[in-house]
Length: 251
Length: 251
Image (cartoon, rainbow over all chains, first blue to last red):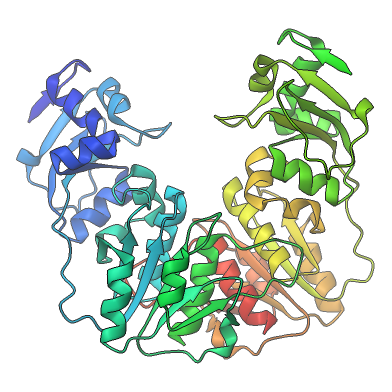
């Protein structure tokens, strides 16, 4: 098995570049960390280029891994490429997949408009997966899909859920052409979500933590909805709001 | 106005101790940071002992603050006591309030069992506030209520929402004595939440990120419920699940 001990190794330097969006886009690769995420990637038959682990790491017997795809690294090297405070002794380099195609374009969709917090994006992808959505569309201006915090908060759902990056304006048009109702979320000129019936096919647009969904999208939607606030909180966290609305609309 | 420039000042050292639970419990005080949280504390007439701000900080005109309650500090001092990467030029020391009393004990309650992530706890308190809950009971083994990340994620709801720290076992008994139905959350021996009718009074127990609600509480509840997973995610984030269930049970 190949072995790398020095943090000055050129490959190690290359992996560290995957911490930034620029580095990931250039290399067409991203990093994942920890047993749970590597296992989810394996189960989903995701293209794992190499598994990095220390000599002490024991792989679960159920994992089908080719020895040639493993590099043994020193704890120092693992720490160098890790973005968590307590690395779990295992990481992997994955290829960024080709964008999923959505040729059928029917079903239930979550559209994410300029959400900034990677934990929120990851949690929303996990929630869309749990709610059985057909796909997620990540609009321009949202945080990068392969950001390590997005992947971690998705708890592996990023490997199961088709996530498309694209222009939400174009997506709303395409969905409406196919007679899929598009619901924006807004506190003004909107109905309480309970005024809507659950839907076999729909698209829900949720937006930026501070500003919400951009007005151009709200104007293009079929109807805008809000979640009533009964207490003194000003709003709900966007991932929590997404969960309430997806499970309600799903019916 | 009083002024502190040196990070070696004894008061500064005292405030830094509020970063730990031990320090907060000993001093009976906690720290908040940023305009939004200080404003929420002021609006809620919370006991703010002192506001710490730099010379450059401009207070909003609407704030009613006594000059004697302000200390001007150097950016170095503010950075020293801050727990965020980009301090906003303002912080405050608040007194830990006396636990809210729940003499009426009727209404809608969220019971939190050993949740570990401070962001989750804060988001759950914010969600309970938005959903108009009567109170939140934070069981033993959950992360500390006055942890700065809990306060930040609560977006100020910690100042509005009665949050009691106590034994959940005792609480479940008390609630049942008053004929308030108690719902546990569990993936086994449970019904889908949609099988339950919305309730004018109820208590919902949500649990630890990995282990869920402890079995003693599940055995003591009136009924246990789960949220169906339609996709390949193993579970929902606990704060998202809390939102779905509170808004459903609220009706």
